[in-house]
Figure (cartoon, one colour):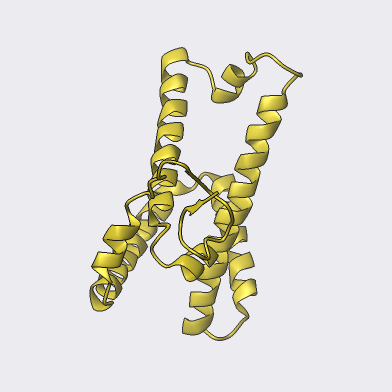
Length: 170
């Protein structure tokens, strides 16, 4: 978000590249698991090097993604619940949501939850669609931000953030 605030839509292509990489990575892990019948962690253990370095590395990435992703989603949901039902602080709602999710995962009671989540998803999608349609988007700036910058001959990246333009001759 800070990069978007600082550079507008100029770095929009980075989001597209990250999403493509994430899709390819997740798809590759799923295909590996289906093709070999083993988990990605068993496959990573076959990579040479110190014992279990790759499993520890991937586990740390998953852990931080889980904490950052689920915690951020829970805090966002808690903030929204705090606006609708101002009885408690958003952090209390977020904590309660995380406890609820842990209980659902622990009890394996997904069938009842699926119907509730389907209804919530439809309502959220309709609300998001209405919000997106109501906002004026600068389509020209977004389209320009989807194009990665090109490096002219004899130029190199000199500094970050790009205060004077993308590429500065050396």
